[in-house]
Length: 440
Ligand code: PMP
Image (tube, rainbow, N blue to C red; front, side, top):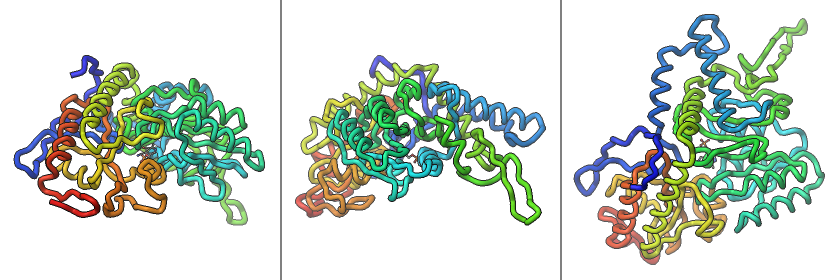
């Protein structure tokens, strides 16, 4: 065991799963990048609050007031966690995808959007073709900054612009030079939104320090799986745009005019984009996770993850035919997220065998980042859908292993041993592929 163990226990460590080879083991959840388990603290906080739930911003009763306080205090906690500026707004959404789609609806007229092709689909797709510039994958952080600077400087006309960039890749786990990209964006009169879905669970995110305009994140990747997300940042575009959803809560006054039309005055606060009854438990769960992470401190978490990443890398380096996917090179700093392919193996078969024979949960595929994964695999951009095409001796998809708070060394050691054994002996209940053929 590594000496550094942050005091952040998670749920689900007692799940037992049957193995196809006989017997059962404790489930090893190594798919944190998709959804992390809930922190025990989050679960306890939610359980303590749930019996006293009432309608927020609505009722005059005691429980309504209690819930309203809880919801608004959660907003303040998230603002502190993200180092928000005095006038920043924290809007509760459903997820990172929802946050970025919301931002896409508040862009000023003529706004162009710049993203790298390496982004998650949630950051690639909400903007609409007409205003999007999709930048090629950079091979170094410095190249990312230079590419963005060139594109922003060359834009015609030199109008409003938004850059959307990830803090940590959901495929390679590599950290992106967010501060430098933000400086480049601002130097060229553009705004920038940080997709912190993968960064926030592993690293402190400081809106002010990074000097980004908005941050988007998901509760279920931040150990708070109760269906809420966050969009935090500059109030102006949010205040000036039409509400994301039209309905109660977002509207301050609705009047039926003599000619029969409805006249609506919308709120200019966060309520503008939070129509309907909000997900109070989800928001409270995120705030609880923010408090738990802040109190534990990120130092322990970061040190521990570094140790686990090093163990996975060492272990995989000893397995013949393994290639770890990387954009910025093998030594680039990364969070606890790592994707790889094994020569001659279909990634789906490998992931299925890890589950069925070893009780290990990983993910395989193209991870909702098709252009990036195809670039990393050296595959053509037209090839392979979500699950990858049938093998033709070359990988069309990858396996991703990811971890964080509460991951014991045993899970990572079991994973490394499992890959080694599977590659050495083959899967016992599956076929593997050799030169485009399936062999038992
Ligand atoms: N961005 C990144 C980098 C992600 O990893 C993910 C989730 N895989 C998302 C955005 C979308 O998050 P959600 O599915 O919670 O909306």
